[in-house]
Image 1 (spheres, helix red, strand yellow):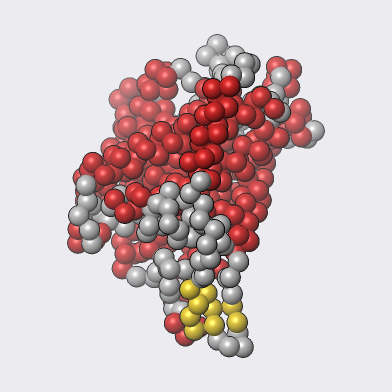
Image 2: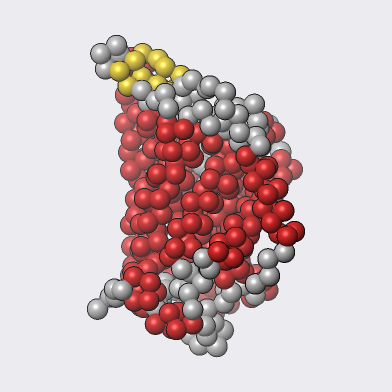
Amino acid sequence: MKKPVALLRWLGLASLLSVSSFVCAETAPYVTTVDKVSAGDTAWMLTSTALVLLMTIPGLALFYSGMVRKKNVLATALQSFAICALVTVVWVVVGYSLAFTPSESPYIGSLSRLFLDGMTFDKVQGLISVSHIAPTIPESVMVMFQLTFAIITPALITGAFAERMRFSALAVFMVLWSIFVYAPVAHWVWEPTGWLAAMGALDFAGGTVVHINAGAAGLVCAFMLGKRQGYGREPFFPNNLMYTLMGASLLWVGWFGFNAGSALAADGRAGMAMLVTQVAAATGTLGWLLVEFILRGRVSLLGACSGAVAGLVAITPASGFVDVKSALIIGAIAGVCCYWGATGLKRLLGADDSLDVFGIHGIGGIVGALLTGVFASKQLSGVDVSFLTQAIGAFSTLIYSGLVSWIILLVIDWTIGLRVDQDQEHLGLDLSQHGEQVP
């Protein structure tokens, strides 16, 4: 592959956009007395955090590993597990500081909270640090809750390049992507001083930060790594759809922590978010199955699982802002649109997005973000919602994530290489990359 100087300049520009905004001035955490912390809110957020972590391990690991061929099952599951470990370290060292520390920049947080500097719990003096975003729970809980989002987002991307990426390349990509893509986008949307937050863009639980972000990166990965050997010429049968069903079920249940937990409190908004999440998952499933039946004359287990995830993805940005009637519509539209995304659009683009990351998460996230601009209730959201603002948030994230992901992948390909060789791919990643296999 050629290494034109112009591409290196692009890398420098992207790095400059991220790094030049770092503000290293001291940003002290908020310290309060322990009696100001809500036991009920804290208990709910601890529960939500565990639920969201279960979405990745074992939820996503099972969901993805059931859809790949038998020779790649362990490698696929390991990717989610390893990302959980990698991103945890990145998050506590620098990620949380970049995403959730107030700064003078609307694009990135400061470096003043490296290694979670300043976070405290002093039992003797009765003092505890809290986040400015969630003042009724310990900051440690806020850090951990947001960590679970930072974990699942890059883990979602792995479905786009299943069965063909080097493990070493994956590890480097996920570390760099978490720092240069996930953290800035989280700051834009969820830090009150972020530029999209200040504009009024609504993303209650991650339709933009998680799903559009991961979908865009996944599509770029699929193009950069190329198609699997035999793709389009031979059938790639899932090795065990029962794994996929178990994974989808864990995702569905875990999503209550994902969406209702994003209320950051045990209150009425959390309850409404939980209800509309269930409703949208149901209509997403039914919408996908209806289209499948009309076009193919039958329904499938994989279709049901995919439809449920589509509905869950689309309700994510809207879950704290819409009522039940709106959730019924959002889920159904997502089921139909994501079916098209995983079939018609996939053929049109010509990319081997192995497990339909863009078709479900990218398209579902865009649908959800835009429909939030249509259905969000001022009574629930407390703000005036703009469809145009939602569109700006969705497509700016799509472009930024795609561009920076492409740059990171180029650099990795120039250095250690992205893809396993043909013999290793034919043998399967379980044996060629990890020296183990399912009996």
